Amino acid sequence: MYGAIADPLKKNILVYTGLTLFIFHFGFIIIFCFADKFGDSPLVSVAGKYSFPLFNQDWKMFAPEPPMKNIKMLYSCTFHDSIKSEWTDPGKETLEKFQSIRFWNYGKQYNIYESLYRNYIGTKRGDPWQSMTNHYLIDMAKKEFPNKKISRINFSFGEKNISGIGQKDTSSTLGNAPWTAIHTIILNE
Image (cartoon, rainbow, N blue to C red; front, side):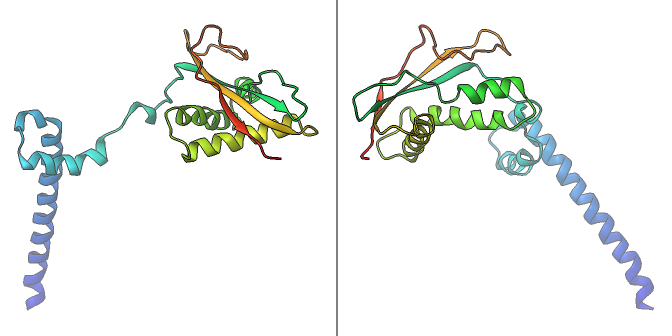
């Protein structure tokens, strides 16, 4: 006898719960879309906290942001016999590979190289980005000059605006680009 009464009650509770969730869901979305019409109401804050993670997106979701600058980091080594090497761009080879084979992981490798530059500038001594950049340059120099004793590495950064999307620039110079000060790593080997 009680089972026959409970079934319509369960059905009504499910319908009312579903209807309430439906109203709240679309109500919050409408409030989120027209937040300026509701002023500084606490309801706008609640609707924003609900809707923002679900519906907000940036354009990077659809396409990566094209680079607006070419970034170069050049380094030069001084050896124990006081001979200096030419200035070398450690990212040149990776950039050339990326531009010739787009479906490989060279783009991600070049992003790491660029992030070393972007995050090094403006950091204080002892910052992890400085340490990573220093280790990267030491590894690159030892790879390029395996049989020579390196006493110091000088390096500098530069950037140049790209005039056209897809423009290739694999040169090791930046022309009249603004270069940062020359930084030095002294090796105790």
